[in-house]
Length: 419
Image (cartoon, rainbow, N blue to C red; front, side, top):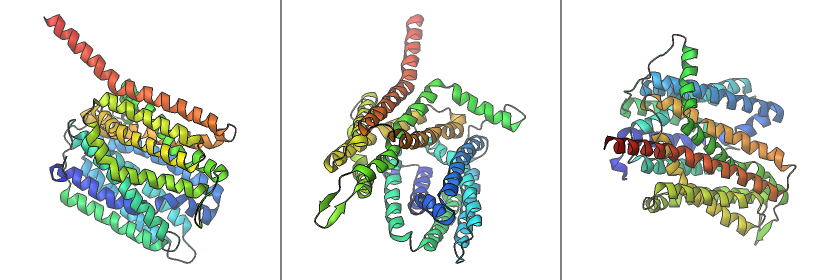
């Protein structure tokens, strides 16, 4: 699908997200380091855990709101508030004695407003696409996300330590341009408004998500995605710590590649492969049955991460990280598109918010591997990750395609009965 053929809303969403993510990726990954340096590791850890919990809960509220009100209005309000909170964070960094309490309050404010707006942002992609072009759109979005994060990581590595204020000023500027772009170019295609079922808004919100939770096929996909994502997230938790402690350093001339540098190389390899090969792989998989392509992608992904979990030589790590990334390139656009096809028209925001549970759950599982890894050998950790991925593959495959098989069976029986 060519860029000029994309709906305007998709173009606006992708362009604004690209620039915003490129700058925010230069700052946000360093928040743990920032708070730990200012107020200590214990406070920083507790504070960031609280923000994750708050973000997830507010995200659920955001899903409900994005189904009840015009999505453009929701995005305009939350985007302006994001810009305001970034401005406050920037101002708090100017004094020699940083206004850390003000910064922390503004950071929580940003977590709340961005979590409120995120479901509406995801719903816009579904609103503006059809089942036929959705896979191509998600492939492009996936590519832009990784490209912007790669640019952000490079910016952060170069500027974060000595140019914090300048980075936050850039972030404030890009955040201010986003609601302006939404106001000018974003078209409100919100039609299927969710009707209020109960007078009490809290009961109505709970009932809304109860419907999503009763959708067993969708719950399977979310649960399966949690297990699948956990393997990738463990790269920067258990695998990173293991490499730092046990990886045998390799010297290329006077340049030494120790554990931490090896982890950076794996992350860079992942991003470069995604940026260079997303569209090639997507065109190739279009020739195959999507069920088979999804399964092949998930199996390659599993083989890659199971090996990377315990491998300790540079060539094994690079080779199997390549296999894992290739699997991700194959399965990810298919999973995203098929999951989007499962969502009812009037509950796109709510279902999108509910699906974000897979990221929060995967993050928790990945962090738990640090504790489990203290008691298990690396080879046993590979077995553990392999079991998790296997559960994920079964849940995603049956969740995405069992419903279609049952529907086809029912239709077939109906046709035979009519004859």
